[in-house]
Image (tube, rainbow over all chains, first blue to last red; front, side):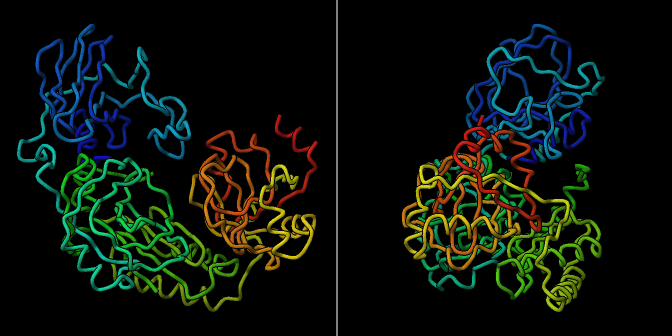
Length: 278
Length: 226
């Protein structure tokens, strides 16, 4: 969900940017190391400890056999990322190691972890130099004070009433508790003026769709490929990382955005993290 | 009409009906886009629309716009090609129209002023084209359903439609690949066993592929369920 945190965790270890890592929603994970290795923890602050001593996130950490890594329930943010040298040993389906529990894909680890389950990763004894994310590049913890979502208007935007289009930018929205990896749902004024009976349109990450209850949702990483409700446009894909960390109740505002600026920022990020496509 | 729904994506909506003819034209535009544009990461064809996603570092909006405009004009000029677009993607599904397994068959028949057997015959007659995939992983919108048995969605969707249920909505039909909510009128059932393997279920249909329904009796249906 938070691709920036996931990319940093792999980069710290010298992994391929697409190496499989753990996404830990709301914390609450305990692991015992069976081998000497290095790991990197990023994302939501889960007050991690190694054998009871506080251990820093956003850096490489060495663990010895028998040591216990404990992530408490997250204090800010929603999701922590835990990466290991070479990436977790998982199956892949459709070019992806990402777990979809609903479909049991991609096979091995296509579901939440079980108690006492053994995890393996590709290069436990790889020599990883000490690395940390420069402090000014560590995203601010959580977004409890509010989040600004740059919105590129599009799709059926012109077919919403002027009053509704005004409401989108004027209202203070809040993140709804029914949000998940498919979409972040927002509470706020009803946007009831959109067209009815549409043919489904292809979606991108960040597409904002107004569903039957007249409330907007922002499509996230487990989104479907097409959606049949009227759409307002799309949120800056980079800001989806911060949105992925927003807890229910977080205030959210939309601001108009410029496509070119966002595209250049995305290009810089992909070059920095050496993101490549299968 | 071409718009940019994201920083490195373009959506083309062809001014044609979202039916067999529409998807045939969209698929020829898709081939053109994949041949003409560098760095295309994904394309999603659906009904009369095509989404093209590219690499942000190689995305020139003016070049994309003019290439897709050229492709769209060519796709609109070409004669509609509504035969199998992807000859490799042909699927035949056994379907049982037993009223026990088809709770809306009777109602569709009454509305169409014909017998349930005639509805089943008309539903299983055509070679359908996959117009889009989506709604749920592995769900395909198939068209075009014979106009005589085209039917509106149910006013209140069912909370639980069984895996393998065959529905009709307007001039489209489809098979529910997993249990879940659904509002289409259910006129038949494909053995659920054909949808058990997730990877197979998700990859079975692609836009432009063809699907045929082979009517089977209750006994054969039960046999295929085992």
